Image (cartoon, rainbow, N blue to C red; front, side):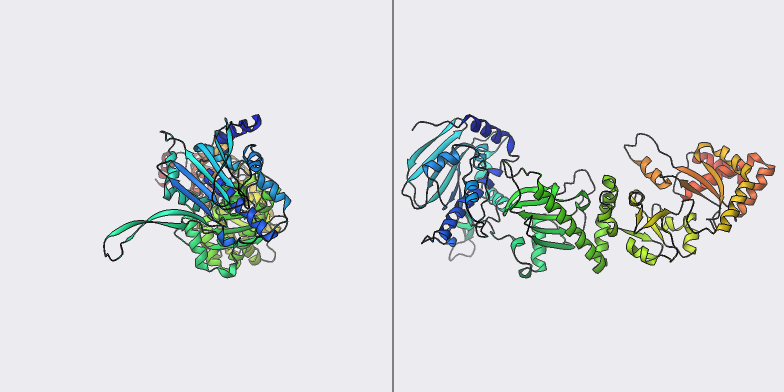
Amino acid sequence: MAKKEFKAESKRLLELMIHSIYTHREIFLRELISNASDAIDKLYYRALSENLNGLSREDFFIRVEADKEKRTLTVSDNGCGMSKEELENNLGVIAQSGSLAFKKEQEPSEDIDIIGQFGVGFYSAFMVAKEVSVITKPFGSEEAYLWRSEGSDGYIIEETKKEGNGTDIIITLKDDTEEEQYSEFLDSYRLQDLIKKYSDYIRYPIRMDVEKSRLKEGSENEYETVTETVTVNSMVPLWRKNRSELTEEDYNRFYREKFYDFEAPLRVIHSSTEGTSTYQALLFIPAKAPYDFYTREYEKGLQLYASGVLIMEKCPDLLPDCFSFVRGLVDSEDLSLNISREMLQHDRQLRLIRSRLEKKIKSELLSMLKNDREKYETFFKAFGLQLKYGVYADFGANKELLSDLLLFPSSKAETYTSLDEYVERMKEDQKYIYYASGDNRERISHLPQTERLTDAGYEVLYLTDDVDEFALKMMQNYKEKEFKSVSDKDLGIEDTGETEEIQKENEENKELFRMMKETLGDRVSEVRLTSRLKTHPVCITSEGGLSIEMEKVLNAMPNAQQKVSAKKILEINRDHKIFEKLKDLFAHDSEKLKEYTELLYTEALLIEGIQPEDPVDFVEKLCNIMA
């Protein structure tokens, strides 16, 4: 039998596909099993539409068989089989898909689901094979044919013998090399693992002969090895079952086994959507963050299935970064797959699914926040930082999505408070949502700037994470209430008379404050009196978009190219005795005034958690004052 050549463009495509298109060699088994499932689906459709006798769905199966001596792996089905003409059209011309043509011709059916559509998956076998043989016999025909090829040099087709209808694909594996161990695809455990990973939910049983050890009959301690035929795949995906059929333990067991987590998830999201985008999703919100979650090494993404066949282990495009903690899967029949099933087109369907998942996740989190507060706080301790980064990232593109999911410690909440809860507790005439930043709750509560507000009954949010203030700056307001730092100049609680009095005293003592400003130089932009303090003598505030806490965060970054500086203001408590002391020094001892100024500035820095530039100098000045 003369060898036939592939068409020139098919030959180039075959070489490209074998060496470039598929990322993992193991994919070939998934492709062959999917093709076998398609072949059975086609025959089953004929049985239903043409009332063929003697065909029952229970009779269909796929078989995988390894022969270590011959180095062959065989994938068999008892589906529709192929005629000589179909062999020429489907295997002789790459990317000529019989499955796609069949799918276009048929009416949609829930029982029929053709997976392969682009006619190239079969050729993935050449990634691991030095020769591929196809023995096939169409249903209802007496003629069987053999198609054989060693790759891009061409193929032969000849008549042969075969029992029963269907197709056997026989792969003769390449020889092992130092780089590639092709013999792994002859190992029973490896094959079972690949079937479970990629083809567990194929709707027909995938059978293999498996060696097992058992006690010999009549013996108490002597074992024998026997070969049993087992069905490797589970066939019915858990996510395609009705929620009423499943228990909490069913979901928890699936989650632990699928995602290797010892703890049960905090929340299970099981949804089925039809319409412009039909898909099923099974999502889980973990109880704890993975060890690498907040590192660059962490890979987000959901498992993506097309009609029960795993296409991608992690599809990042199905989740926004702010919800990257979500684990789970999506199974869709509508996604457009291009030349190989692992390469997903960025089409409208994908965007629709992502958008709907985003809304569904937000809805479930909000429900947890309102109805199961303890569980939500457990979630927030693990992943709240990610939500805050999500508010700040991409110029605030997701701030509307995430703002009502945020929690913060506050001066009135024992644990956390949401922005909704803060707004509900606001005083009737309160203009702003007040916040203060610091390393921890205790330190913030002792800041001089918070004292007057909390004593007057105003609630203050405590921002303890580096990203917190950046997130609030990006949000600007919540429910039309502007965020206001306790260090801002105007807190909206000063009465007109008090403000006028402070302005008058600042004017009267402007020479004192000018001398103090000259002493501190560029370290502050201004020295002035304030009425915001009660018992503390001094504090540092800032003006402009960059706060003192933001300055600390930015300058602490390892890739900071240039130090940034907030516009600092040294404020003196007008009602503290230190003010009288400063006025006296200004009148009688200008050198001592300079020392006091340096000490007060350093004291204010320490209150903010900022290390003085020269601690030795600070100690010396303190000792001089004490002497």
